Image (cartoon, rainbow, N blue to C red; front, side, top):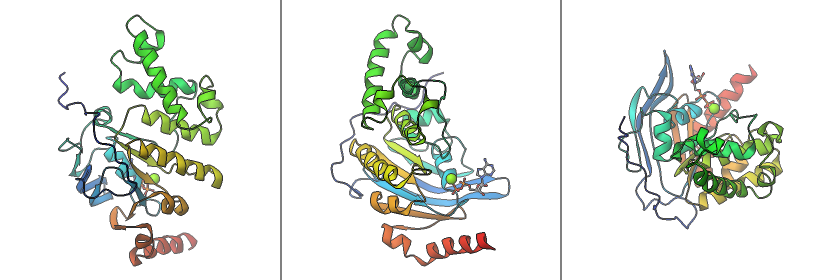
Length: 284
Ligand SMILES: Nc1ncnc2c1ncn2[C@@H]1O[C@H](COP(=O)(O)OP(=O)(O)O)[C@@H](O)[C@H]1O
Ligand SMILES: [Mg+2]
Protein backbone atom coordinates (compact mmCIF):
# COMPACT_ATOMS: atom_id res chain seq x y z
CA UNK A 1 0.00 0.00 0.00
CA UNK A 2 1.26 3.45 -0.84
CA UNK A 3 2.39 5.55 2.10
CA UNK A 4 0.31 8.71 1.89
CA UNK A 5 2.16 10.60 4.62
CA UNK A 6 5.26 12.34 3.28
CA UNK A 7 8.37 11.52 5.32
CA UNK A 8 9.50 14.32 7.54
CA UNK A 9 12.43 16.48 6.61
CA UNK A 10 15.38 16.36 9.02
CA UNK A 11 16.39 19.91 8.29
CA UNK A 12 14.25 21.79 10.76
CA UNK A 13 16.18 24.67 12.31
CA UNK A 14 17.95 24.18 15.59
CA UNK A 15 16.45 26.14 18.46
CA UNK A 16 19.35 27.49 20.48
CA UNK A 17 17.57 29.44 23.18
CA UNK A 18 15.91 27.55 25.98
CA UNK A 19 12.26 27.95 26.74
CA UNK A 20 9.25 28.83 24.69
CA UNK A 21 9.78 30.03 21.16
CA UNK A 22 6.42 31.63 20.60
CA UNK A 23 7.54 33.65 17.58
CA UNK A 24 7.69 30.41 15.63
CA UNK A 25 4.44 28.81 14.57
CA UNK A 26 3.19 25.99 16.75
CA UNK A 27 4.60 22.54 16.08
CA UNK A 28 1.55 20.87 17.59
CA UNK A 29 -2.01 22.24 17.49
CA UNK A 30 -4.57 20.21 19.38
CA UNK A 31 -8.13 21.40 18.80
CA UNK A 32 -11.35 20.31 20.55
CA UNK A 33 -9.76 16.94 21.25
CA UNK A 34 -12.05 14.48 23.02
CA UNK A 35 -11.70 10.86 23.98
CA UNK A 36 -14.55 8.86 25.46
CA UNK A 37 -14.35 5.38 26.95
CA UNK A 38 -18.01 4.39 26.89
CA UNK A 39 -19.69 7.03 29.04
CA UNK A 40 -16.41 8.21 30.57
CA UNK A 41 -15.05 11.44 29.12
CA UNK A 42 -11.27 11.03 29.53
CA UNK A 43 -10.54 14.11 27.39
CA UNK A 44 -13.06 16.90 26.89
CA UNK A 45 -12.59 19.33 23.99
CA UNK A 46 -8.92 20.01 24.78
CA UNK A 47 -7.16 22.86 22.95
CA UNK A 48 -3.40 23.20 23.29
CA UNK A 49 -0.35 24.32 21.33
CA UNK A 50 3.28 23.29 21.64
CA UNK A 51 6.06 25.37 20.10
CA UNK A 52 9.41 24.16 18.77
CA UNK A 53 12.10 23.95 21.43
CA UNK A 54 9.75 23.95 24.40
CA UNK A 55 9.68 21.59 27.35
CA UNK A 56 6.00 21.60 28.29
CA UNK A 57 4.91 20.13 31.62
CA UNK A 58 1.57 18.34 31.87
CA UNK A 59 0.26 18.14 35.42
CA UNK A 60 -3.00 17.09 37.05
CA UNK A 61 -4.39 14.64 39.58
CA UNK A 62 -4.52 10.91 38.82
CA UNK A 63 -7.25 10.11 36.34
CA UNK A 64 -7.30 13.62 34.86
CA UNK A 65 -6.56 12.45 31.32
CA UNK A 66 -2.81 13.09 31.00
CA UNK A 67 -1.84 9.63 29.77
CA UNK A 68 -4.92 9.52 27.55
CA UNK A 69 -3.66 12.69 25.85
CA UNK A 70 -0.34 10.94 25.12
CA UNK A 71 -2.16 7.80 23.99
CA UNK A 72 -4.17 9.79 21.46
CA UNK A 73 -1.14 11.84 20.36
CA UNK A 74 0.80 8.63 19.73
CA UNK A 75 -2.05 6.78 18.01
CA UNK A 76 -2.60 4.14 20.68
CA UNK A 77 -6.13 5.43 21.14
CA UNK A 78 -8.27 6.95 18.42
CA UNK A 79 -9.71 10.36 19.22
CA UNK A 80 -13.49 10.48 19.61
CA UNK A 81 -13.55 14.04 18.25
CA UNK A 82 -11.17 16.86 17.41
CA UNK A 83 -8.02 17.39 15.37
CA UNK A 84 -4.26 17.28 15.92
CA UNK A 85 -2.09 19.21 13.50
CA UNK A 86 1.57 18.22 13.85
CA UNK A 87 4.24 20.04 11.84
CA UNK A 88 3.30 19.67 8.15
CA UNK A 89 0.67 17.00 8.82
CA UNK A 90 -2.82 18.48 8.82
CA UNK A 91 -4.44 15.92 11.13
CA UNK A 92 -2.81 12.92 12.79
CA UNK A 93 -5.66 12.31 15.24
CA UNK A 94 -6.69 8.94 13.84
CA UNK A 95 -3.47 7.55 12.36
CA UNK A 96 -1.95 4.21 13.33
CA UNK A 97 0.94 4.43 15.85
CA UNK A 98 3.63 3.44 13.30
CA UNK A 99 2.53 6.26 11.00
CA UNK A 100 2.64 8.78 13.83
CA UNK A 101 6.15 7.54 14.64
CA UNK A 102 7.10 8.27 11.04
CA UNK A 103 5.68 11.77 11.36
CA UNK A 104 8.19 12.34 14.18
CA UNK A 105 6.43 11.74 17.50
CA UNK A 106 7.82 9.24 20.05
CA UNK A 107 6.84 8.46 23.61
CA UNK A 108 7.75 6.57 26.72
CA UNK A 109 5.23 4.81 28.94
CA UNK A 110 4.24 5.32 32.55
CA UNK A 111 4.94 1.60 33.04
CA UNK A 112 8.06 0.36 31.33
CA UNK A 113 7.74 -1.62 28.14
CA UNK A 114 11.27 -2.76 27.34
CA UNK A 115 12.21 -6.01 25.62
CA UNK A 116 13.54 -7.62 28.80
CA UNK A 117 15.40 -10.51 27.22
CA UNK A 118 17.07 -8.36 24.59
CA UNK A 119 20.29 -6.46 25.21
CA UNK A 120 20.48 -2.75 25.85
CA UNK A 121 21.81 -2.20 22.33
CA UNK A 122 19.13 -4.40 20.76
CA UNK A 123 16.40 -2.47 22.54
CA UNK A 124 17.61 0.74 20.92
CA UNK A 125 18.01 -0.98 17.53
CA UNK A 126 14.43 -2.20 17.84
CA UNK A 127 13.36 1.42 18.29
CA UNK A 128 14.92 2.23 14.93
CA UNK A 129 12.85 -0.27 12.98
CA UNK A 130 10.30 2.22 11.68
CA UNK A 131 13.20 4.12 10.14
CA UNK A 132 15.26 1.24 8.69
CA UNK A 133 14.82 -0.05 5.17
CA UNK A 134 15.72 -3.67 5.84
CA UNK A 135 13.59 -4.23 8.96
CA UNK A 136 14.60 -5.81 12.24
CA UNK A 137 15.02 -9.49 11.35
CA UNK A 138 17.48 -9.13 8.43
CA UNK A 139 19.44 -6.58 10.46
CA UNK A 140 19.62 -8.81 13.55
CA UNK A 141 20.57 -11.84 11.42
CA UNK A 142 23.20 -9.83 9.59
CA UNK A 143 21.84 -10.79 6.16
CA UNK A 144 23.68 -9.35 3.14
CA UNK A 145 22.45 -5.87 2.34
CA UNK A 146 21.36 -5.34 5.90
CA UNK A 147 24.93 -5.45 7.24
CA UNK A 148 25.90 -1.94 6.22
CA UNK A 149 22.66 -0.66 7.65
CA UNK A 150 23.36 -2.54 10.89
CA UNK A 151 26.75 -0.85 11.28
CA UNK A 152 25.21 2.59 10.80
CA UNK A 153 22.31 1.71 13.11
CA UNK A 154 24.69 0.47 15.83
CA UNK A 155 26.70 3.64 15.55
CA UNK A 156 23.59 5.75 16.01
CA UNK A 157 22.39 3.52 18.87
CA UNK A 158 25.71 4.01 20.67
CA UNK A 159 25.40 7.78 20.21
CA UNK A 160 21.96 7.64 21.81
CA UNK A 161 23.19 5.46 24.69
CA UNK A 162 26.06 7.94 25.10
CA UNK A 163 23.56 10.72 25.85
CA UNK A 164 23.26 9.12 29.27
CA UNK A 165 26.99 9.35 30.04
CA UNK A 166 28.34 6.05 31.32
CA UNK A 167 24.96 4.78 32.53
CA UNK A 168 24.05 2.74 29.46
CA UNK A 169 26.84 2.65 26.88
CA UNK A 170 29.18 0.34 28.88
CA UNK A 171 26.20 -1.99 29.45
CA UNK A 172 25.30 -2.33 25.78
CA UNK A 173 25.54 -6.14 25.84
CA UNK A 174 23.62 -6.58 29.10
CA UNK A 175 20.04 -7.78 29.03
CA UNK A 176 17.52 -5.02 29.71
CA UNK A 177 16.17 -7.15 32.56
CA UNK A 178 19.49 -6.93 34.42
CA UNK A 179 19.61 -3.13 34.53
CA UNK A 180 18.80 -1.02 37.59
CA UNK A 181 15.39 0.60 37.64
CA UNK A 182 16.78 4.05 36.76
CA UNK A 183 18.83 2.64 33.90
CA UNK A 184 15.77 0.89 32.52
CA UNK A 185 13.94 4.20 32.48
CA UNK A 186 16.90 5.81 30.72
CA UNK A 187 16.92 3.01 28.17
CA UNK A 188 13.25 3.64 27.44
CA UNK A 189 14.08 7.21 26.54
CA UNK A 190 17.03 6.11 24.38
CA UNK A 191 14.75 3.68 22.55
CA UNK A 192 12.15 6.39 21.95
CA UNK A 193 14.89 8.65 20.56
CA UNK A 194 15.91 5.90 18.14
CA UNK A 195 12.87 6.77 16.04
CA UNK A 196 14.44 10.26 15.55
CA UNK A 197 11.44 12.18 16.89
CA UNK A 198 10.85 15.90 16.65
CA UNK A 199 8.43 15.66 19.57
CA UNK A 200 9.11 13.38 22.55
CA UNK A 201 6.36 12.54 25.05
CA UNK A 202 7.62 11.44 28.48
CA UNK A 203 5.02 9.90 30.81
CA UNK A 204 6.15 10.29 34.44
CA UNK A 205 9.84 9.72 33.70
CA UNK A 206 10.90 10.47 37.30
CA UNK A 207 8.41 8.09 38.92
CA UNK A 208 10.32 5.75 41.24
CA UNK A 209 13.55 7.74 40.97
CA UNK A 210 15.33 9.16 44.01
CA UNK A 211 16.18 12.90 44.16
CA UNK A 212 19.68 12.52 42.74
CA UNK A 213 18.43 10.33 39.88
CA UNK A 214 15.70 12.90 39.23
CA UNK A 215 18.29 15.69 39.07
CA UNK A 216 20.32 13.65 36.60
CA UNK A 217 17.19 13.02 34.55
CA UNK A 218 16.53 16.75 34.38
CA UNK A 219 19.98 17.25 32.87
CA UNK A 220 19.36 14.41 30.42
CA UNK A 221 16.05 15.90 29.28
CA UNK A 222 17.61 19.32 28.82
CA UNK A 223 20.38 17.78 26.73
CA UNK A 224 17.82 16.02 24.57
CA UNK A 225 15.91 19.27 24.04
CA UNK A 226 19.17 20.93 23.01
CA UNK A 227 19.43 18.31 20.27
CA UNK A 228 16.36 19.92 18.72
CA UNK A 229 13.74 17.64 20.22
CA UNK A 230 10.64 19.34 21.59
CA UNK A 231 9.37 17.71 24.76
CA UNK A 232 6.07 17.22 26.59
CA UNK A 233 6.48 15.70 30.02
CA UNK A 234 3.79 14.39 32.37
CA UNK A 235 5.15 14.54 35.90
CA UNK A 236 4.02 14.66 39.52
CA UNK A 237 7.44 15.74 40.80
CA UNK A 238 6.93 19.49 41.06
CA UNK A 239 10.64 20.10 41.58
CA UNK A 240 11.26 18.60 38.14
CA UNK A 241 8.39 20.51 36.53
CA UNK A 242 9.57 23.80 38.01
CA UNK A 243 13.21 23.24 37.05
CA UNK A 244 12.61 21.91 33.56
CA UNK A 245 9.43 23.22 32.00
CA UNK A 246 9.14 26.53 30.21
CA UNK A 247 5.36 26.20 30.28
CA UNK A 248 2.95 24.08 32.28
CA UNK A 249 -0.54 22.87 31.33
CA UNK A 250 -2.83 21.63 34.10
CA UNK A 251 -5.58 19.06 33.59
CA UNK A 252 -8.50 17.92 35.69
CA UNK A 253 -11.39 15.63 34.74
CA UNK A 254 -10.20 15.51 31.14
CA UNK A 255 -10.21 19.28 30.75
CA UNK A 256 -7.42 21.77 30.41
CA UNK A 257 -7.74 23.89 33.54
CA UNK A 258 -5.10 26.49 32.78
CA UNK A 259 -1.63 26.99 31.36
CA UNK A 260 1.30 29.34 31.96
CA UNK A 261 4.57 29.49 33.85
CA UNK A 262 5.06 27.03 36.71
CA UNK A 263 4.27 29.72 39.30
CA UNK A 264 1.20 30.97 37.44
CA UNK A 265 -0.23 27.48 37.17
CA UNK A 266 0.68 26.39 40.69
CA UNK A 267 -1.02 29.45 42.18
CA UNK A 268 -4.09 29.26 39.96
CA UNK A 269 -7.21 28.80 42.12
CA UNK A 270 -8.70 26.01 39.97
CA UNK A 271 -5.42 24.06 40.12
CA UNK A 272 -5.18 24.42 43.89
CA UNK A 273 -8.80 23.32 44.14
CA UNK A 274 -8.27 20.34 41.83
CA UNK A 275 -5.34 19.08 43.90
CA UNK A 276 -6.88 19.89 47.27
CA UNK A 277 -10.19 18.40 46.16
CA UNK A 278 -8.52 15.16 45.14
CA UNK A 279 -6.43 15.06 48.29
CA UNK A 280 -9.50 15.70 50.41
CA UNK A 281 -11.38 12.99 48.51
CA UNK A 282 -8.47 10.60 49.05
CA UNK A 283 -8.54 11.13 52.80
CA UNK A 284 -12.26 10.54 53.16
N1 LIG B 1 -8.27 2.09 28.04
C1 LIG B 1 -9.14 2.67 28.88
N2 LIG B 1 -10.39 2.16 29.03
C2 LIG B 1 -11.27 2.75 29.86
N3 LIG B 1 -11.00 3.83 30.62
C3 LIG B 1 -9.77 4.37 30.53
C4 LIG B 1 -8.77 3.81 29.66
N4 LIG B 1 -7.64 4.55 29.77
C5 LIG B 1 -7.94 5.52 30.68
N5 LIG B 1 -9.19 5.40 31.13
C6 LIG B 1 -9.85 6.30 32.10
O1 LIG B 1 -9.69 7.63 31.64
C7 LIG B 1 -9.44 8.51 32.73
C8 LIG B 1 -8.14 9.22 32.52
O2 LIG B 1 -7.08 8.28 32.68
P1 LIG B 1 -5.57 8.65 32.41
O3 LIG B 1 -5.47 9.38 31.14
O4 LIG B 1 -4.78 7.39 32.54
O5 LIG B 1 -5.26 9.63 33.64
P2 LIG B 1 -3.88 10.20 34.19
O6 LIG B 1 -2.78 9.77 33.30
O7 LIG B 1 -4.08 11.69 34.26
O8 LIG B 1 -3.75 9.62 35.58
C9 LIG B 1 -9.49 7.64 33.99
O9 LIG B 1 -10.78 7.72 34.54
C10 LIG B 1 -9.19 6.25 33.47
O10 LIG B 1 -9.75 5.27 34.30
MG1 LIG C 1 -1.08 8.59 33.68
